[in-house]
Image 1 (spheres, rainbow, N blue to C red):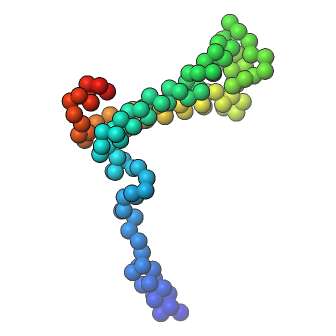
Image 2 (image 1 turned 135 degrees about the vertical axis):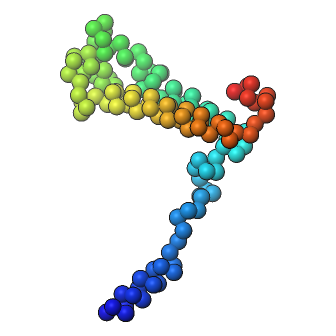
Image 3 (image 1 turned 90 degrees about the horizontal axis):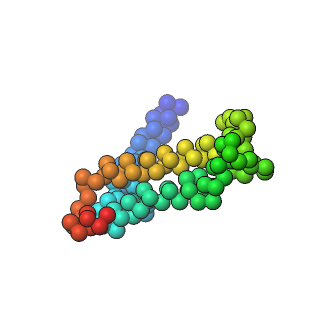
Length: 129
């Protein structure tokens, strides 16, 4: 039994794969920021989080119903529980959605800023962006 187990472990060790390979079929930080198009796409991703429904857009008008100035009769987007003062982590996805969208944007901007020293772009593109 010991010989079988030893043989099995040996076979596994010689057929193991390396997990240090960088995928070429998708973007990761190690294979991004190489071309001006990729750098511009990263910058656009920073701004794209502002189009999230929890940031601006149709949800913005409902944010007033979280104050004493307005009332949301049907509870659209979860603002009613904020206005009622009965919000908690279960009954309102607006809090999680709003904070999630904010931190998604912050994370994208931090990633962009961290990659900035390695950018190889023209002076014209630097001024334009």
